[in-house]
Image (spheres, rainbow, N blue to C red):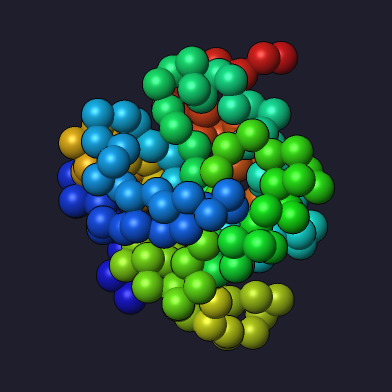
Length: 158
């Protein structure tokens, strides 16, 4: 499974968000984007990660980053997740996993010592020109947002 590297063009996409709106990477040109891939809305790890992004969103947006979550969940489930956890950034639906696959965030992984196929928790930073600035695979749900902020020089409140 190919993995993206800094400098690679970010694979284009147009996906439906939790609100039903269409979001295209092409429409985000000129902005820095954090796109994080997670396995499933409303699961413990994914909730932890989403709430960490929610709680840290202001420093990221203040540094010029737009944050988007990406999962294979249907838009309706994403909308329930946003409402339940009061998320303040868009979640994108990739039910056929084509975008997840293009980003190298879907495929074989090891969970609890067993090989399985699924979403690989990953984060991508895409620059204003649509190129990969950072690609992190197999990230942990807990502590990842703080680590990403440190890498990007985004100062989080103490």
